Image (tube, rainbow, N blue to C red):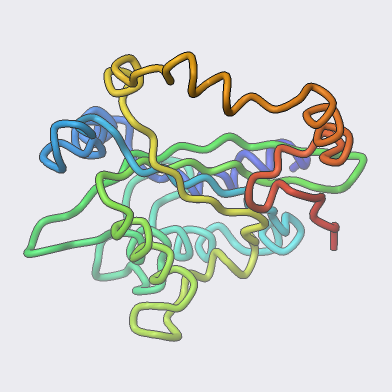
Length: 215
């Protein structure tokens, strides 16, 4: 199996939501009753995962399916009677008051063959940040502690950021700054150029401030 195919295969791990569930998730991930000003907005987590493809491909299909909690070829969820409690989809299923709290998730596999880097960009939308935080806690710490997501033995989170994304309606209704405020806050062109040189192309956002050294 080549690296590109392998990357796509392990990316199946990080996005195991069935297509039939996605339309329902879109309705659930909006803020809804969190206040009229923020209706329709979502909390968004973005993560970059790097995969140990050699280690993953060395596993049998049965072991891979046990780590994910779904069959590899047919993408059918394993029965609870045989699914390990450390399975990825078991630890990322959040239930409150007997009701599953869903998020909308997706991913994009990527690769840089010359650097030997292959992985997945993961994005998830949620009504509340607490849902995402609980999923991450279950994955990295374990539920109970120590019963962590075995997928992390083969996939490392290199970056991670949580954002709030308002609805387009909210953005369209944001008032522009009064002219006098905009004028007073404008900085000299020379200062802006200096800042641009200092940043050297960096977005200056969280872990994107600098390059992450490769292992």
